[in-house]
Picture 1 (cartoon, rainbow, N blue to C red):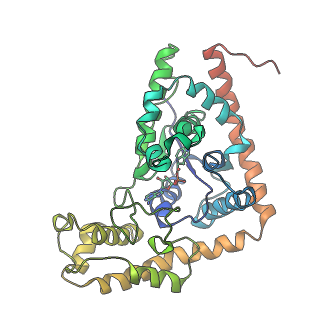
Picture 2 (picture 1 turned 45 degrees about the horizontal axis):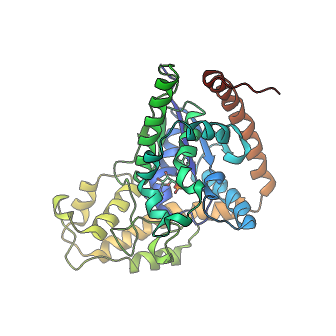
Amino acid sequence: MHKKRIFSGVQPTGNLHLGNYLGAIKNFVDLQNKFECIYCVVDLHAITNRQNPEELKTNILETIASFIASGLDVEKNIIFNQASVAAHSELAWIINCVARIGWMNRMTQFKEKAGLNKENASVGLLVYPNLMAADILIYKATHVPVGEDQKQHLELTRDIAKKFNNDFNCESFFPIVEPLIPKKISRVMSLRDGKKKMSKSDKSDYSRINLKDDKDLIDQKIKKAKTDTAPIPSTVIELKNRHEAANLISIYASINSIDIDQVLNEFGGKNFSTLKNKLSESIVEQICPIGKEVKKLLKEQSYLNDILAKGAKKASLIATDNLKEIYEIVGLKKFT
Ligand code: TYM
């Protein structure tokens, strides 16, 4: 009953990496030709952890530049930053009053990010998933392309939508969103530890490939990527418990848009240096042009600001209409 609409967001926290690209942005690009898509730089999410204001401004532009450099069409899609559309925060407050504290306490990402010092984490970090639900529901989006690490937040978004529809007796008002998680590689792992997610916040730059890395750095990082001593297996079953091997093979499959079986056919029985050489080549071929374009676009700040302004206008039209309906349902009225 709801029109298919895609929404997704990326935090402007710097160092966008291969995990963001293969887990999310590559999928954004594929979806743009098939559906109405809304892509957001979620700057309000970024401030749940302390940010340097000057760096944040640059990172917002860099994230937009990365979207464009990866192939997102600024005419076809709505591309904007979250802080420009106040309806996100307004719906987030309503959702704060719908979601239960127990639901928040179950979020594994909060536990990971807050670490041992949970009492000292910002309240924003705790209720972050509610803002994420608001981002999606304010557009009545039906499908959300994300990496596997965001799956629990999307399950929460579904629970929130169901509870709202039920509490306010408005069946099907909010759609029950479907996550779109890449099958070949749902979670790109660190190049230093195959059990850890590739992440912007990892202290070791050698754990990730950044979109802005140049050829030499990519070659070095892949050469140094951790592997084990056994040769590459020929079947998927033999990859079990070989986390680093599985990661490199999955990255190779994903970046070349081929199946894991095909990779194993090609490299089974060979040693890792053969795979690493080819993997470096593929990453350099796809990632370096993006990084170069990002650097170029960052010199055209007024062009990027213009895109954000246009995107915010288009997003606001949809969000404001939906917020009006939501206020009406909840029993609130804006006298403006
Ligand atoms: P963020 O900014 O951490 O990451 C952006 C996207 O990249 C994906 N991703 C990965 N995918 C595979 N392997 C990895 N190692 C990896 N690291 C990151 C993430 O899954 C994500 O899709 N909460 C979100 C941002 C957000 C959002 C939203 C997303 C806010 N509101 C509404 C979708 C819809 C986040 O922190 O993503």
